[in-house]
Amino acid sequence: MALARNALRIADAATAAALAARPLASAADRARHDRMRSARARTGFAATRALAADMLRERGIPEPQAIRADPRGRPFLPPSCGLSISISHTDTWVAVALAADDRCGVDVQSPLDPRAFTRAVLQRYLPPGWADALADGGDATAPATLTRMWATVEAALKWRGTGFAHGLDVLRWEADGIRTLVHDDEAGRSARVDARRLPDGSVLAHAFDPPADAVDVHVAVHVAIDSPSPGARHDSRCAPTPAPTPAEGRPT
Picture 1 (cartoon, one colour):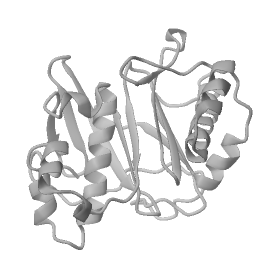
Picture 2: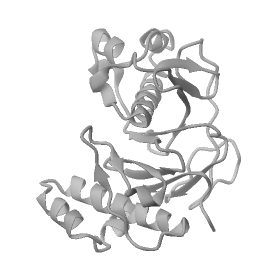
Picture 3: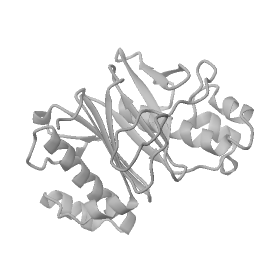
Picture 4: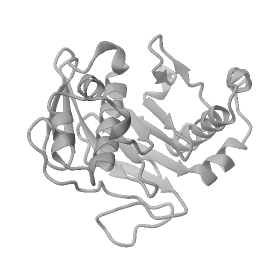
């Protein structure tokens, strides 16, 4: 089955370990892998390479492709693939996004505790108004809300390809109640960022250029991912999890 225009694959820790056990295809990847000091980094690196190779085969690209990084650290595929790629991994999840456009973004964020951040830090690393939304939501929902916010910001900045180094004002942020829209006015580009909660409280966020409604999301987990449709299960496609309607300019 061929992948859709925009595609995302995410795997839990057990599946990532199996993916990481596969031999790395290129000498450059093997050398980079061996230089990594932590087992977590080595597992995440090898697992995302294997996951990307599987996705490329579904695209009709059977041979392993070198995934390199530009000067800003953004991964990219050879131009002959005609695809952009984004990668994220934590202790418990690995994710790879592919898009038929020249940019996309994916982020998996482990659960965050707002008490670990000063208000100044939150105001610096969240778009205008989002820190206020976090405070207005109450203590009970603050960890889940902040985790969703952070993943959303990371995915959007990966889509633009700049990261936090250039600040958040390089993008214009708005929300429509279920997802976040970001606009790169300098480039005349926009993306939609969808976020969903994972079983362990982590959040998966992905950013794609329009049309972003047909994102093929394939999950390999031992516990079902949250979904508005009952019966989501292992290795299933999942739709975004709706969130309460936020105020204009605030995240979902």
